[in-house]
Amino acid sequence: MHSTLQDFFARETPRMTALADQIWSLAELRYAETASAQLHMDALAALGFRITRNVAGIPTAFLAEWGDEGPVLAFLGEYDALSGLNQESGALVCTPSVDSPGLAGHGCGHHLLGTSAHFAAIALQAHLQHTGEKARVRYYGCPAEEGGSGKTFMARAGVFDDVDAALTWHPASFSGVFSQSTLANVQAKFIFHGKASHAAHSPHLGRSALDAVELMNVGVNYLREHMPSDARVHYAVTDSGGLSPNVVQARAEVLYLIRAAQNHEAAELYERVQNVARGAALMTDCRVEIVFDKACSNLLQNTTLNQVLHAQMQALGPLRVASEEQGKAGAFQATLSANDIDAVSRPLSAVLRGQVPTVFEGLAPYDPAAKDIMFGSTDVADVSWITPTVQAWVACYAFGTPLHSWQMVSQGQSALAHAGMVRAAQALAATAIELVRQPQLLEQAKAELLERRGGQPYICPIPADVPLPFLR
Image 1 (tube, rainbow, N blue to C red):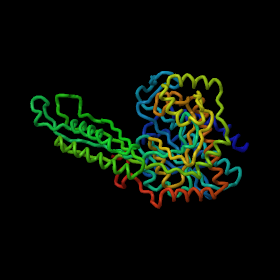
Image 2: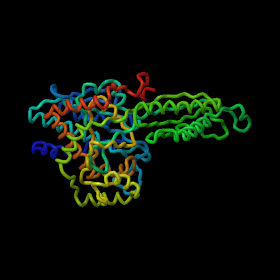
Image 3: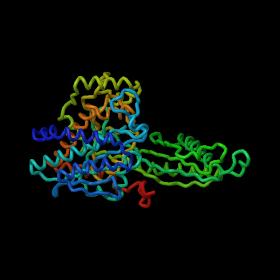
Image 4: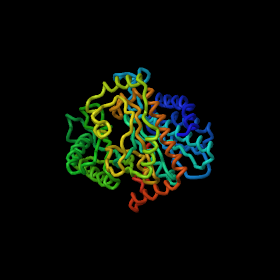
């Protein structure tokens, strides 16, 4: 990384760190990230980015663009939090903040994710201003990754269609190219409507919607034996029908999240789950209402871009962490179980060589031939069907810290979190600069995407008639 860009990162790091900490403190949930989005927009507008608000009809989605010529390089930013993960910063035990107990928390590091992508976008802008090279720099403010598929709704609206390449990352407890595929998913509500009655005096007159929910859950559990081994189905009872056991429940609701390796497999499994729900309604003489909530695609890897990113991460060298931060990370690591740490250690066994670090300072190996699956989902996947997309994992937490945990929230304002955030911005910016300098890489990446799609166009997994969640 040339000295001008190094100076830029050194100068701007305090401002970006403060932005990340502000968003950590806001901890806003899906589609309600009003203040977080505004902070990003204000900062980007001050640097000359043109702001487009209300992208895809979503009040907390926006587009910031700088430049008029050259390839369109997009940085994908997120800033949503998770429900119920409010946590006191720096605490070594699960301690909800006294200021807002029980509310949301950044248990997936999206305060860092969005800020680092923002940092990379303005670093690319600074590089272009210094060198005179040409590109159109975009930052996409993407809400509701957690349970909302914000990017999928944005993709449905066509907002990524003219992008030449998309770059993003995710906070983790190790560093490396995000080289796994992810699971496609469908999320839907199943609302059962029955008939209330006195549960003791006249139970024969009632039709229990709660019974229907329970029968559906039992039926889906039997279905698990006959699903693909890499499929996943989860549910949460979101309305049990009231608090009075002596009333036959006239309404009950369950929310299902259905995952499979490819879009068509998720759609097929969703149809089978719907049939189970219809059977449960028939058995209980209830009516079932099925409400499609959201979906996202399976992630398409791009080896061309992955290799560029891996080379840039190698060139940056190890993530050096001071002994004081090593000690703090060690204290957090001591709160984790052996299974927590093993879940991260096993895939990295070749580089760890039997040693478990407190902080992962190195780089995971990248194997272009690997066909691993990360058994989670991301709406970045829908962008990857439209334009070549690349992602990194970057260490921001004590090694082994699991996603969606109180430990992750508690470490979210640490010096290690900030260092990882800056490192991610450096890697993304360096990768984008390489794409500007070698435009043939973009052509190779686009050709690879067409090959991986196998001649299929992108078809949004959310039907056109499904409204945005906040409009229902």
